[in-house]
Amino acid sequence: MDGSKVKNKPVRDLGRFGTWIARRVESKESRVEVSLPEYGNVVLGTATIPPIEVDVRDGHITQVDFVADLTPGKFEGIRKLANDWIDGRVGHLRVMGKASVPLKSGVFSLGTRNLKQSMVFSGQ
Image (cartoon, rainbow, N blue to C red; front, side):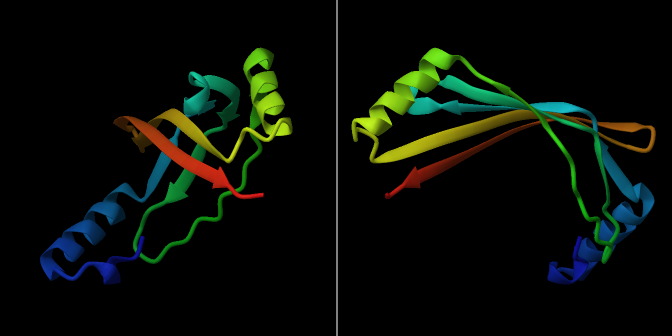
């Protein structure tokens, strides 16, 4: 966290105080599903992400490095994408990642956050 980027001093001070109390935020094990929206949301694969703990105090940096277990999706959908790519019918490809990540700080649960990110690959 970088409190110096917050312009409003009372808000900045409140944020620094809150992160000083919380200190660390931990995610539990979660699954990330990667799918292709233009191919009927066919699942390319699923990654199992281990628990990750980060220090959220102002000015503290946490290096994050983890290994994920990958499970491939349905081969029929992947095969259709591969055939379209080989035949030159794929000009761009949109990939969607979705995850539900349970969070906690100390003994307090912060709930589950639903995350969704889309990326478009295009060109040669």
